Length: 371
Image (cartoon, rainbow, N blue to C red):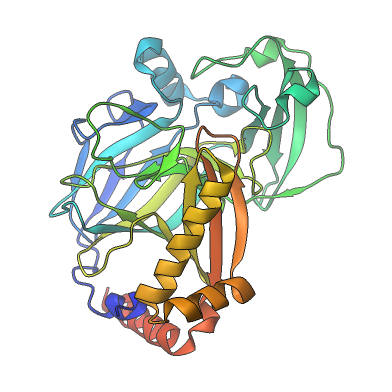
């Protein structure tokens, strides 16, 4: 039996060897897809740190507040015909030296800083309750406070027609702005809605559904201080980030989060010492697995089976004991219900495994001291 915490003790090449800057430009982003044939825009080594820009495809919901010259350039120069089959602007891909199918890519998200103080939420035609609102779409623009701890609704407006074209610019300075949600403050928790490695599938794969490669997971816990483990499917891994958010609730019920561009700092570490079949999230206090399917019940089953695998194969518990522990101590939640493939996440507290966690903390402290 392998234990992830013990596996971390054997990790190699984690000391940062280089710091890279990756700006979002028409040459360094791809709009709406993952593709294993896409040439990398940056090559790095295990342990390297990347400071990358993640641009929201909803910047056009309030172009006067959410777009600068660099973002305008992306919107203008990437043809609409090349924004498919998904919708998200992805920065990358990044080639990780030595990454091969069967490896795991550990991504430590170190910092996520909003590019502007504004973000957009769209009650969209793909939202869960769209028909209950007479098939009307509505945009709400949120403004962060000076410290970036909370956001409040700045104004809202109804969107005429259907919001279908990736990179729509709504010309909001000309819209009918309405006051909304007066006095309500929303905690700001910046995170990436979409990130992952290239799947081993010929041609473009849409960024809209989540999958074993990562993709549009939409878990608000994938923020600064979190670590994600992605199963590598192709040489070099070809990792990309996009769909930045500043806040979201579980479910993402209206169809979007508060969509806002972020500057993201992360470290990539190549792991050849353990494997997990789906994107695995490590936070300060939890392990979280993800299950996906067009059917929410099947997504629940997939998350359950991967949590069973985590406890059995990586924490050394029997299958019977793992099943019991899941029922009494694991929390299952609906990550999102608005993508073409729905998501369920399952959380187990790391405090349940004190000995392993103490070893993990000591090893990380030692590594930080050596860095």
